[in-house]
Length: 275
Image (cartoon, rainbow, N blue to C red; front, side, top):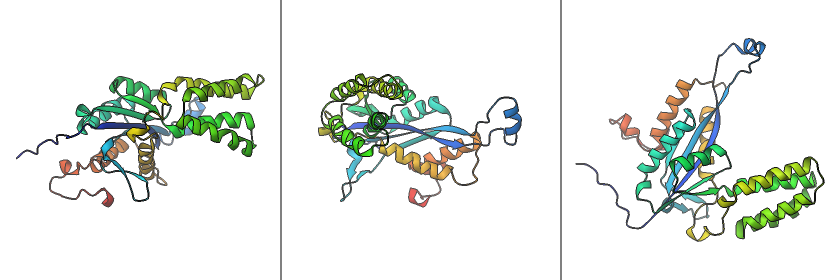
């Protein structure tokens, strides 16, 4: 008897988040000195592209108010952006993207993420991680106020509230006014870079408009996943090969996505906590 597909009774939205973290591999092990003599720096660290997808109605809160996701899909691969593109799209379809009323991409400002989003999820809305945006606001403050933490906090606090509760356009205008009042130099150049950054992501920073939908404004779910994976793959003394780390990542995803039984149908163990 084949299991029946779950038919949603109410419209739901999908949340998709992406990030990346570094894994250490023993590339050309023992040849570091020879490579450096040839003018080549040995490469030891490589990106693991990671993504998570979940339905918004699967996101709830604990009694203490901490957000919790009851069911979600995970993807992590060493095969690069191309591998993530295919695997994350497939996982999103498995989790119900085709029946979703809409989708939202949340991530930091990495260019590759938004290019992937445009390619594989062209109909999805896009949102810059709010806390990442705040870091760029703080970078402006540090460029202007230096080590004066009191002035930095006094300047930054209302700007953060404005970004979250009012308009990104107003924030950008204030940063532009600040830049205009600075003499030419390193501080002015640093502020100019951040102003350009905010202009680039202006359409992704409409945090106030989405609040009634109870959507997340940060990409904490995928960032937490990256930290968990790092703990597994960055233990002392571990050096991987691409063949080895991709194989273990594949097994890890089968386990975390509750598909372990597809590999080992003779066992009923499926509790990730027992991994």
